Length: 337
Image 1 (tube, helix red, strand yellow):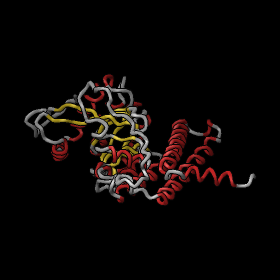
Image 2 (cartoon, helix red, strand yellow):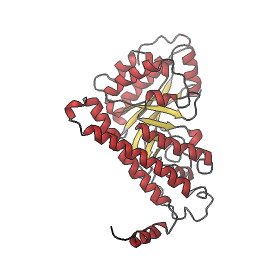
Image 3 (cartoon, helix red, strand yellow):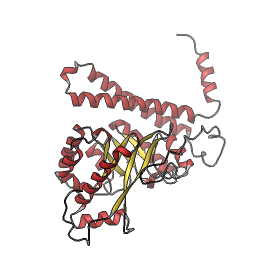
Image 4 (cartoon, one colour):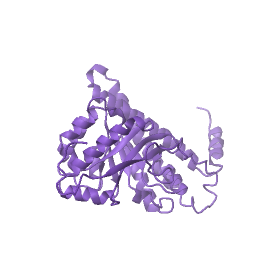
């Protein structure tokens, strides 16, 4: 643990880490895990971090947590480990030294900056996160859609991952406003080259609604609870296709085909435009494009291609029974070109 003067506390904070899986909903494959703190005195992490911010010790606590999470990586499942950061920690020079130290598997690390907290200097935050990215570390904005910072963190920090807050996930299967916001966030993420992870999924109905909105990675008690190492084998399995999605059931009655098609068309057009832009840049001689920019372009094109595939799959699954047969008949009725 980094040497720290814990003035203001009776003793050094006593904490342990638990890890919650983040999974691909269509395959149940673990994409990564989020490291979460549990304190020995039973107080909530929010209370601890609030007090540490007040005493100017947030960075010290973050660094202690990071060091412990890095030590746990060999015991974690394949994929990334997502670690929360207070915005004030971005100003601490020890952060880069720790995360980019010898032997650290930077390609397995995601740092999450919460949307709840104020970033006083976005230019400095961009510089620090940019340096971490050069080393292979990815950036996430946590609690998206809940904090007072609204979407500014996303616009300024341009994260690789947008973590949709549990306040949007909760009851998304029955609340049209939450569904609309989630779908809009997916479209926005596609346009800025990010992926969306839903937090706080607690029911199968919420998982189905997330997939219908185009969100394919999630975490929550419907999948797996946060647990200490070693993590047990995953019990979660992909949800079977819902053949009764349009049979009038209460859970699925909210789907509006016209709205779904309009949103899907917007998403496909945006993603296709992004792919075309990337291909146009790649057509330039590779030597004329800096290596870091070239890799970013390729990753962006890959993400958008996956988005197009996912949207098309969602559209096909979301069409009412018999629609595909009608479309086939119409296609066959068209005169040959």
